[in-house]
Length: 414
Ligand code: NAD
Image (cartoon, rainbow, N blue to C red):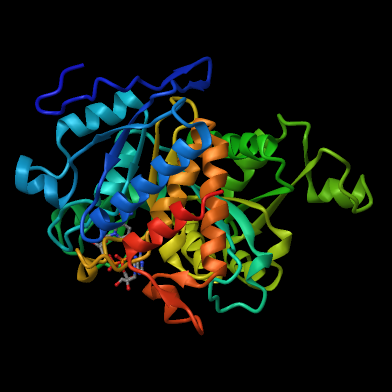
């Protein structure tokens, strides 16, 4: 493994994968992409909080050794590319990293770096837990009823970006091919996109969601799709999902629940449901407590994650991870953008980065450190000591800067 400029800290050891299990040394090397815009503010605070939790949980027995990886706008200035080869090599070889938000230049033809990273590392599961922290201002009457984990497919669907602009030769060729070879007529002035959904990608996603559900004692798993309209992509997603689920005796369908078990879930069983995407949005507002783990194709999953995050009080604190459960590659990330207008103001909420760090600690198996952060985070929110985004919606709140919020979490760890 050769690096042009990256210095790998000698104090750290590599995380590896063996027989499908992540092997984590006590001093793991973990990649850190600081991010653009507000990225440096939230990442530095998050890094401190994570280090403090690890120190508190394990004294000097465990320690993360960070390796900073250039990417995004800042890398462009120094290395003339938004994704230096060294960064990619590190991510491919050292498995685990966490990142701040990266700016996507609008209309310049540059693809989103986030999408590129997910595809290059084949990070097929986008995992987003959405849970309410008491005290966070929410538009809902009972926001605590929502407690879901969304598994969104991350590598295909419309996000593959296979599309042709209206009026181009390529678009005309596709339109003409569809007409002459497939008997399908499309308006001549159309842009055209392609939506591939494969059995392979669907089943590995559903499999990882089922295994997550089993490991974490979840109650139900719901396949979310728009199969009534897009039968061979979204409809097939549902069928392939049911097919792989049949390999797990722990899962029962809703039909089995009512016809075989009289509506009472037998101990140790997980209910397998499916919902049409538009109805899913209604259900999450009207009966959130009936849903637990949601599995969706890329586009539906994207919409659902943001809608659910808004229900529990906003995107500033919604964490996320992109994981390939076979290879072990995992990239944890703040789910919001780089909010350029707040750059360098030490103002925004670092919660999304910090809670993504919690997901990372859980992924490493360092649950004690993860719990220290979650507990302290809940405490300071209940005490109404928060950043501007939450403070402006809470009566009697004490306004903290981004860095002060991090310090408050560290000081309240117990
Ligand atoms: P954004 O999420 O950056 O910001 C929208 C608004 O949300 C901000 O103006 C701010 O009011 C609020 N906000 C965001 N994060 C916050 C936080 N941590 N605390 C408090 N308030 C917060 O969305 P945008 O303006 O549409 O996108 C800006 C850039 O970020 C774009 O280049 C976009 O492509 C990129 N982006 C990156 C990611 C990622 O890296 N994962 C995700 C989304 C957008």
